[in-house]
Image (cartoon, rainbow, N blue to C red; front, side):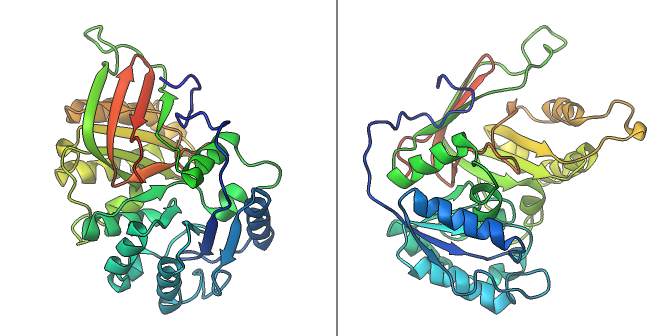
Length: 328
């Protein structure tokens, strides 16, 4: 097990590496925080990387980073850029409505040539669609504005995981799950497990659920499904999970891994119904283990996860590890 509660599973003191070519583009919401955008670029440059900014990265059309055609063109420029990493400026909303216009084969070829597509939140729509259409692997990870463009220093674990991706050394991610009461039969809430050769997939829960019943929803069986969300009350999280449950998706997974669910408010009406209530309920609905506290979501500390890659998953006590070796 990695010895840090949130660890990228790699010691990177001994690796010298050259600069990487990073392409910044905006496939979703408009960038409103220009200062954070500039800070993020400056930070990547300070790390020694070459940053190329898409010509429409700061475009704005109502709430979007340009109209649909503009954002589609940006995705295709990112795919044609030859960059080592194509990093979104931010999430928000906008990808689900342009999924039919994406040239998936061109994006998959870019991935084959070595471009790693990285993003979070609304980016789940792009990642899921690409996985469903081509099987190509992308990375759930930071966005420029919200993660690299923060005032002060970005989260060191997120930076270490990003560095692992840029240097090609990322091999896995370990973390410590929440402390939970034992089950009624005295067994631990999560038993020790080892899952091997399972497809890692998932991302933002609301975005993923919006794809159910469409050609852009991955048909992953025997997978490890990871989920996170922001601003969704626990009852809404449960309702979204219920959709995946009734659609038969959850029963087909080897494990469900819950990341961070934050920025919601409980009310007196809840009378003790909280996120743990949802976790407890979910465990009564599926046979697969439900793991907690993955360091991923709309939070500063986020690991990078290869969506579509084959992974192994192990749990010993509260220590969990997702391992993918060299997915790229």
